[in-house]
Amino acid sequence: MSVQTTYLIAFALVVVVVSLIGSHMHRLSLSTDSVSMASSLTSVIVGAKAKHTATVFWFHGLGDSGAGWSFLADELSNMFPHVKWVLPNAPMIPITINQGMRMPGWFDLSGLDRSIAQNQDEKGMLSSMTSINALIRNEVDSGIPSERIVIGGFSQGCVMSLLTGLTSEYKFGGVIGCSGWLGMHEKFASMASDANKKTPILMCHGDADPVVDYNIGKESATFLEKLGYDIKFKTYSGLVHSASPQELADIANFLKERLPSE
Image 1 (cartoon, rainbow, N blue to C red):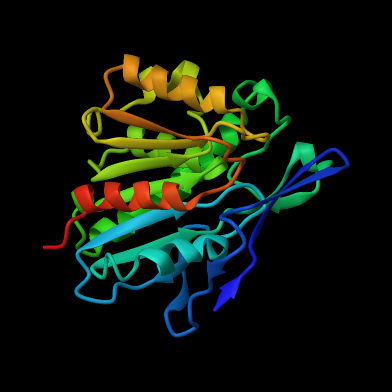
Image 2 (image 1 turned 180 degrees about the horizontal axis):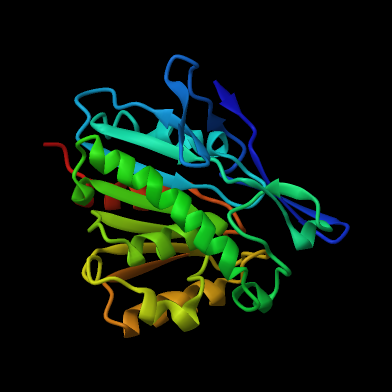
């Protein structure tokens, strides 16, 4: 079944509404959707269709939910039947650009211009990293090698995937960041772990993004490249703050390389 999906961000009295991927996405059947709890986070879980040998964690953006990205698992589950998908839900927190009202967010945001990468809610980022790391630890403890785990995310979720992935004690199969940036960049070098210095990173960004400026994402990729990371940055002409079919194809190709069936 297809369903129109939107991604909402409030800025003062303006609500920016953008489509996540065109006008058609797929809703997972209730038989494959379940909810789990680890630490303080709940997650939408989409189980592997075959023997479970790999896991993808995907973190949503501000105001969204794990269910909002279930279409990604739905689109790719036939291509990757051995993969389990974990789609965590961010906690409800006060968001400054939403006039202090609570909404799902991994950390607070005070603006949507270039200040998005400044005046950062480091406390919120670190708190979310702690909760996310607990989820990942549970997955590794359940028997999935960390090298068979890829973590990714969109917008705020991109911030969390890059920060968590590149500071983790675990070596991952890969890291994906879409339409976002590297948080805490001034402290990143001292936070980074050795485990993922060579882990492949895929960053994707539309050059018409009105929410997270394309150049902020590009600068984050360049910053990581200068630090010696194995990063590939994909640009999508005319794409706003959303995902596109070509971007999904690039993500699928990345997963083929990083999480092949065993």
